[in-house]
Image (cartoon, rainbow, N blue to C red; front, top):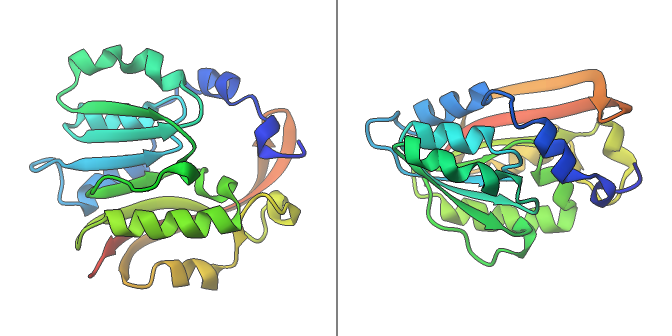
Length: 199
């Protein structure tokens, strides 16, 4: 795989359609005050939609962003959910302004923007969060197989820490292990940060 653009995201997302939501969904909701007063979630790189749909089942209003529209065909589930999913078929790097949200959520996506687009997009995402809003995101670390690729942002921990200035870090986990991506062997170095905006 030479570039992220060569991945057949539609096929990947169809394959992932049956997977359960990540535990990070429940952690983000708890950090944002729980389900008693659900609000808006931005799910960036929503893919097959398992996480977006789980937020909506728990009463949240989800703005789901992805360049693949696999999730669009699954939104009939909205009829059985107390929340809603509003799907945006767009590259998140091209979004001028994001809606105000209680939670910004993204798994395995932000690093694919590359360094420059990530920096621009991050500023907009921080601006979308009010005080007390929650950021729950994955970023790629420097041990990742993709660290030598100029089109993917792989960041040292001190740079990730700098991105979270003005936040209280609630939880951080690190995945630093061999695995696979599609048919290829890959070393994953993924830093997952759950944090609350202070100001």
